[in-house]
Image (cartoon, rainbow, N blue to C red; front, top):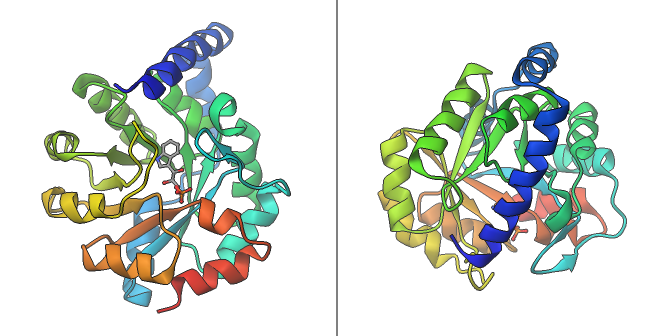
Length: 264
Ligand SMILES: O=P(O)(O)OC[C@@H](O)[C@@H](O)c1c[nH]c2ccccc12
């Protein structure tokens, strides 16, 4: 694990311990089962690809990041969610991590309630308890960052997601993680173009790893996508979806920006 991920994992483990002390597994499961039914995340991506013949967009609601600081001052999750939906996004991704991304658990429910799109809870999972918690918060999909978890924990997170009827996006950064994703057997795999060491983005990462992704998996190119040409480039490398945050969050008119990013 890189220093950055090590630091995040450390505060997450502490945070989760406190949350678990307040809510047992049974208690969080009861909340998960009472939550509004999951919206099919992977299905929505498949449908959008079918409908448009182009990569589907997972549009991210992201206020700040460790590498860029504050990205968007005028931050209104429901309004952003509606703009993304109207602009043609297939799904949303909502950052809920507070310390590094100025996210909040509440942003997920707020965004999801404003639209009919499936929502990914974008956070750092280090404990299976967080999967039930994600469902309780309304998440339709979780993120499994392979750089942060071992194979046993990844398999447990994936099984929990399935148990709650959610999808799971398995995030990879290199060849070794892609091989692990194949062994895990997930059907939604992401390539993060951002290096966890330098924070630099390079779309070549998607080009390098896409051919190694599991045959049955839908491939998502994540991070560093700014222009329709970038979408074109990862599409040519067989990505069927793109996960975009910063480039859309920096625009005043998010709906128009979303539309033009997706224009052929
Ligand atoms: O803002 P960008 O460069 O468009 O990237 C979005 C998304 O890929 C990025 O936020 C991300 C990808 N994987 C993550 C894991 C944790 C937090 C954030 C991320």
